[in-house]
Image 1 (cartoon, rainbow, N blue to C red):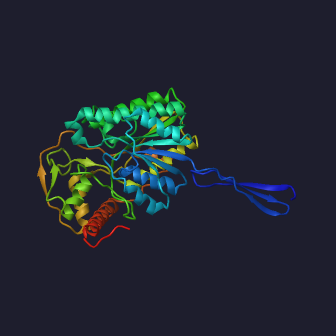
Image 2 (image 1 turned 45 degrees about the vertical axis):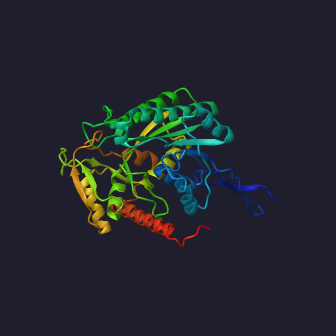
Image 3 (image 1 turned 180 degrees about the vertical axis):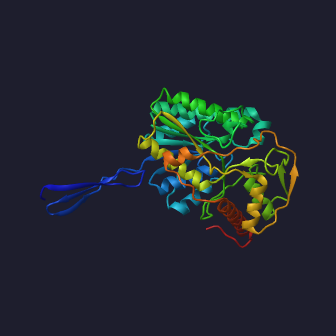
Length: 387
């Protein structure tokens, strides 16, 4: 083989290495230097946002490993992930509040390249009724994960935060520099405290981190193979809408119509779960590419459009053709009046693009609910047999 006369770097998927194309005097010779895909640990990966993020990670060349004790999730969701991606994802059924069990996951996976930490309880109303449950679970699990980040020198950490850290803001839309107000619920306080814990820890360990404050994820994967699967009566708006529309719930309650908003109901920033999921992949790659200017950065993830609860209901009725049976009830403790995002920073720095409209969100959520009913009918059929 004659001497090399040209060489070119060819990019690969984000989670993989690159390869080099060498042009020699004898022609073209390609040398593939494909390293093993970067392994990302996803806590709470059987949950709603976690499962969609695993799909997005795999589709962008990463390897995903899941930790979820399935106390509030369904392990079958990973079968859906496999159907979409063709990749089987291992789940460790581990309680992250147990340090020894958590530590064992890292011992078995010494090549973890980054962590996306979703695992947490998230129902605002429940947190008001059971504050100690939320403080113990959400903070102890985070602390145990960060202990392992320190010991095993994990370089990249993404924390699932929330717009609840803003409380009832003085001005909207909120930016990443909007001063946090007192949280309206213990759940909100766990996110405020979690951000502080991650920020202070990042100053003293090898890892660099990003705090993603997302607003109100809704909808389902466009394939309708995976979606939101709340256990028990849903406390989030959209699954309450779809379950009422399909008849699982006899009636839906709108909590308050006397807020100082354009129609009296709360204002939220609804964002499609697949858009949220992709932002996690982009945030991880942002750290890997050393684009961050500080060791801990914050990004809002929302559409930037405030939608009232009653407007969301009307959007659902429009795309589904179903008239929703709902009543107006009293305000619910812990609910913020109005909050929506200024998302310019995520768009500019992460290269994030929002692909799904409010109608898309409602349409995919409704198609997912219809699929759940169809699957239930199949499994309840006495002639149905599992292979």
